Length: 425
Image (cartoon, rainbow, N blue to C red; front, side, top):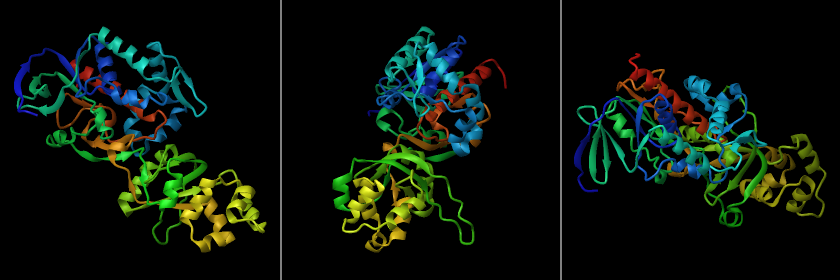
């Protein structure tokens, strides 16, 4: 990029939103509904790009479970998100979509989808409403922080622009899917202002482990169906093992390891264990519908002249992939030992060595720490600057929880910004 020239854009009583994802768009809507002039800036050619891509396989807006259970999905950040989600919960999100003419339904898993399963019609209706409310969109404007006078700096077409904002809402996303705009480039800009940050880490991501060439070639891309899993925890010596309950679901074998919905649900614990210990162990129950006693009893019945693979398939109903996984992970001695094999079928340890790269992850953890903002979402290091969405230091599994918190924190930041514009401290 050539050295930008510089122009200045004056403004009077202007709210500036940086970021055109769900959090930024909800902030813009909330402010413009109150008659505030909102200018929304985004580095990409159009808004909602990650939102649209996430909806390609079916737009999962939120989850229908009760809010006390819903809140547990946010782990250690639940208390920090409580107020925002109480004010704009899963039902409020469904009502909001209905107000845009987009009806929703609850799927068999409890997830909530638009009736047509698509993101594009919702986004089109939403942008129409925002334009009707007077929101002005400025595309291909990359935020560069502040100048010495406190004006926002943007670069557009090699020209630097300074914009005065009475309130500023940052909804810049996390660090995953950089090609769609969430590249984390804002991190050093806030660090320079003394804002406390946690490193951006992959969340809802795949994990790496080396497969044998045979297993990789034959099974990469195949789903492991109807299993249960948990993260195997290593307790300090002398402490009793506190086993976590198994979570049932499915995931996919990849050329480099594993990924998929069941893996994503456990990704935070797996990632944190890898960071702390250098590796993690995923414990698998290959037959969650059969008890350990039943599995052992079936194995003790004897296989006669049948091969072990044929016996496991006909007697226990294990499919070819599950059988191959046993051969991949167990020694010959374990396969030949009935008790060891029965234990492995119910508690198969699958070592994982690393997360897949951040840019491949569905979402990211880390970002602006909650200690760096007040209860309204305003930065303590800069007055009248609010943060929302995935750039805050929280994470959640897939299933609608990510989007719901983005919408809710966007609305919360806008309401706080409105109070700021009205002179409330």
